[in-house]
Length: 253
Image 1 (cartoon, rainbow, N blue to C red):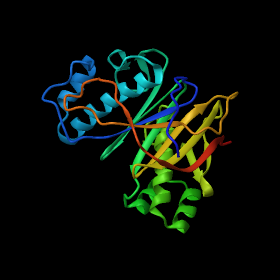
Image 2: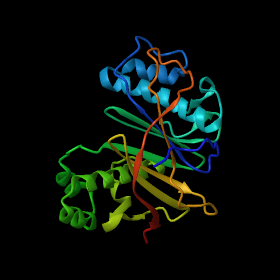
Image 3: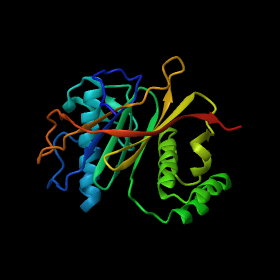
Image 4: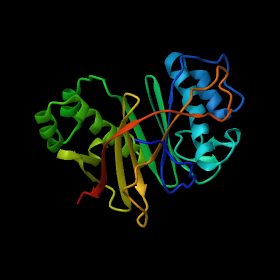
């Protein structure tokens, strides 16, 4: 499908993707906050590179969504769920192997990605963590790709609603044909799942009750950062993506 428009409205969520480069810096870049620099200094190897790339991408996404220069964009300390500058933007972050993803919008949201070719021990995970309804249709389907879609839905849902995995994976029930039921009766929640750059990408967001709920989020693939991870505005590059499904999350009574 076609790439995004250039609109900067927070009402429509936007997703920013970037292939992670296998490079590191000897010290945190100057644009990082003290919290980010201290966190990066404690990390090593892959986790350190992922942290650096994701913080760079976060500022690029905030910048292009809001029209603010990237050097003036800053997430909150701790879990990056919102912005300090510019204010009033919600954020979510995910990274997996070679790809990083950031979602931006004006309402709570969560994003999760998984490599589409991944072959996890999904039956064991489903037996331990999923509801009997989910287990029944997943085991009948016997399809690892369907499991990846369910897993990213649950991860994105928990990020959007501000909760961790422990004890909460069944707060969203994914039924056959990806009919969704969640434990948040207030507000309107929407899930969009698509395939891009070899990854399953799922966004859950709190939608506007007076807008067009059928719109897919804008999706942009940005060029990787320079060797020094400078905050020069990143240019969009060609990508294509395939929609998998889009659903309203119904309140589970």
